[in-house]
Length: 189
Ligand SMILES: Cc1cc2nc3c(=O)[nH]c(=O)nc-3n(C[C@H](O)[C@H](O)[C@H](O)COP(=O)(O)O)c2cc1C
Image (tube, rainbow, N blue to C red; front, side, top):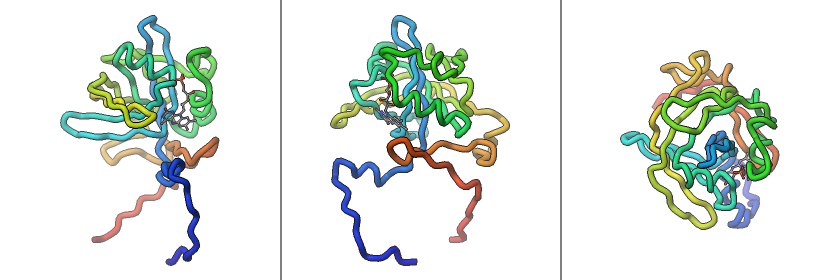
């Protein structure tokens, strides 16, 4: 199938949008005062299996940036379309002036190994301690060493996520999101 020859020129400052939709996560963190926070992130990815590492990219002006630098721990929580509104909310207001757990109606539950809580409404959780950080232009990449990783048994098995049950959130851009068609393709190569 051909897509035609006409080109849409994307300015380089918006080039990242060509990589979207991106799987979107909710990162929970806590400051040294004990104040909890949640930040919505589309820029997250695994970077190593052994040691198990995950990277998240956060702009320095975000409140969560300060909190992660303070306590050097965070949890990557996986939301579903069931909490899409809450996911957008946590990405539109700052924890500087808001209690996002309370205002979004999300439940903080104790994590196994780190101080920040997990988010009860999410289907999976990666508990991390800060391994390293790098400045990349106007964002900081925080590398988390994954200390614990677990998921809801109804949604995740050896075969991976059950996409009928766990409708993952993908950020297209702005206030727009998509989810996966729960169909598996296995190409013969
Ligand atoms: C869907 C979505 C994805 C986002 N992805 C990122 C991201 O990857 N990195 C980032 O720094 N901010 C991202 N943001 C913006 C932050 O979530 C937003 O600025 C948030 O209010 C910061 O909260 P805080 O100040 O409490 O840390 C995203 C926002 C939305 C809605």
